[in-house]
Image (cartoon, rainbow, N blue to C red; front, side):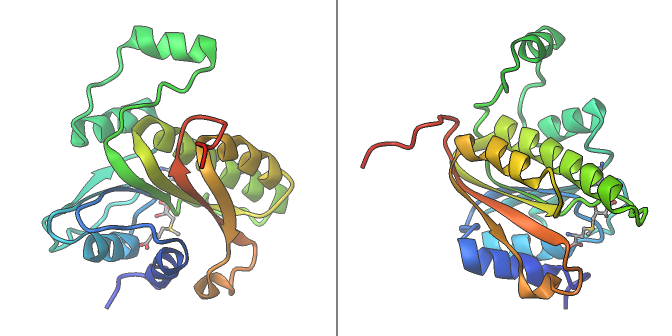
Length: 210
Ligand code: SAM
């Protein structure tokens, strides 16, 4: 039994896009109450590692490969905790400053196989605002993917459909072999959500030759 029905969405995303392998390291953003963590832990097995982050407390899972970080992913402090959990050296503030100025994503840490985000804003009911906030969270997730993914790694982010979705997808596309929109059956009840599934992190706009 899973803690959240959303677990079935991740199973379906994995069936569709073949996200997880045995022994993978996975980052799960917006992980509470932990349904996706349970699925990811099963998929990567005892040799894998799964790190979940959420604003909300996540009750301990009895899978030793899962660890959780309480925090807001829009805050640098939370991202630092994630770096420590993944054993990645924190970026110096100078490097941060430089990457902000040059617009470069720092990238290339190459420690994570899959970054998934099911983060969702608190719904206001105002369609445009909820959409914009969800796109913002998906962009935060994308930055996280760029920072930590290994070449060939995969990225999934939930987003509410709306006018900025095309731009978001276009911004993600150059860093991966391909990006698709997937609507798992399990999320049909909330029809405005869609998952961007980006396969094969490349960090290079041109796909490698055949
Ligand atoms: N995938 C989860 C599962 O299977 O149990 C369900 C995730 S739920 C749909 C969305 C989660 O995103 C909420 O728990 C919420 O607290 C979290 N969230 C929203 N904004 C966040 C942020 N800025 N940082 C971290 N988590 C956030």
